[in-house]
Image 1: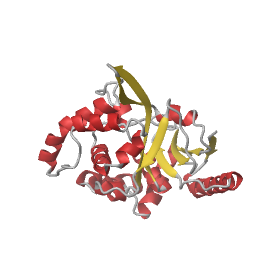
Image 2: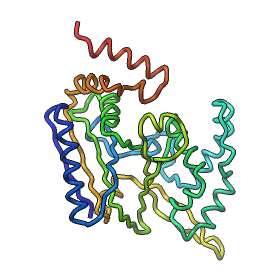
Image 3: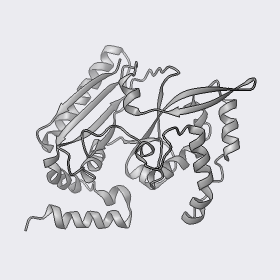
Image 4: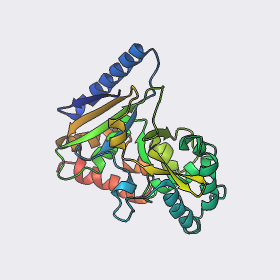
Length: 286
């Protein structure tokens, strides 16, 4: 059963002590189980009341009944426009009929094993995610300080606290047919932001089987991360670090001194303008 831990900080300066607490909890769990846990993944949210939601879940335009196959059909239809306008090509990605056949032929395997046989699919999915196409994958980072930038940079005005999630996975993973969560991303060749942000990605799905004639038809329903993590039978460690929203200015100044800011994480002109403006309008006191 996953262990859940809340750490409530009074100030940003206490953040390193929270990371030490996570490391101690991770080492204790590893010693008790006799096996290592994965390195922590972090995700920063600008309001502690927000759930772990993907951009597909938050999209007003998305179909709430979207499945993996219906979603793949949409991104496959979008590929010519993306390639034409962005001057990039993804020639290795299966067209929708090929992908549909791939799922049916690989019905004995979980979707993460199926997708891992063709990393170009992941590369395209991650590119779309980084550039605003609603996505079923949830992005994490290997750096707690990068997660803190995301939490404070896009902080909700109504927030009393921001939150940094830490997800430490048990090396022995087991899921039933009702829920499956997997993580990818460390060694993928994709958009530069992937490496600037030290990104990792998770996907939560449920296998669905529909009978079509004499043959089963395989698809996957997307599941909310909060739901899957809350019911996880794995011996994971799930930590939420709460930091007062009033610490935003001090946190962003400190992070900027580490060269962690919107421009260093996105590399776009818009993020450069945001970084310069923040140094002038928020950091300086006239």
